[in-house]
Amino acid sequence: GATGVSPKMTNPQTIALNARSLMVRRGPKTLLDGVSITLRPGRVFAVIGPNGAGKSTLLRVLAGELVPDEGEILLHGRPLSAWSSSHLARLRAVLQQESDLRFPFRVEEVVRLGRIPHAGGGDSAHDHTVAQEALHLTGLAPLSQRLYPTLSGGEKQRVHLARALAQLRPARGASAPAGRVLLLDEPPASLDLAHQHAVLKIARSLAVREQVAVLAILHDLNLALGYADEVVVLREGRLVASGSVRETLSPELIASVFGVSARRLDLAGYPRGQLLLGPAAQAILD
Image (tube, rainbow, N blue to C red; front, side, top):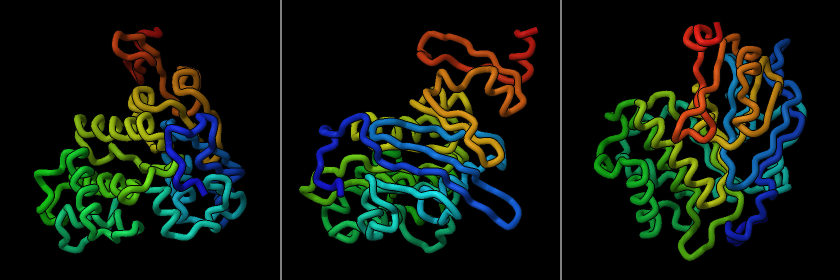
């Protein structure tokens, strides 16, 4: 295993998670058709594609919720089935688009659920400290004693992000495992504009500062341009393109995959540019 290895020692070419030739079928329908993806520490990967492209199916397979009909997933070179559930939970956290948690837990208690796989089980002084740090990072400290069911959808999403962050923190006195993985299913979906950027800034900071491999399903192509290093493009269950976000998200690819006109604008403060989409882009192109 990779536990005990300092993230500073991580080779940038190290593979955190490797999915090979994933096939998922439901009756006559193929949801994923031979998709392969490699996640490396310190990198943010955006998964984009039209509705029905297989994005959420891919995330569910990577999260271990769905077993593929064919293909394999290796975490640190070992099949997911070779890891104990607690060890796996210390290396990989998942933020789902929605949660069905309905118990009247306080916000801080929900965040401490992320500490269950660790030695303190969520109740140690260290676990409380980690939970408070995650609440502060996500801007939720003032809500720590609020009952979770009373929150708005966006606030609930941020609580589960804090839970995932707490889950990836190592035990007291332990060094962080290299190549931890954070999977985000449309993290901005229920958030206002400011919090969309805040969540992705946190994800990017985790990647850069702590060598976490982050994968995020995104619909907004400009959010992908702004925060991701690499992009994976799906259409009808197939991988149609992958690579660096600036090179891959070309106007030609966007027109082909989404059927939308696009033009890249090079603007000060946006090293990868911004995309103008739809009628405005078409007007310029005309």
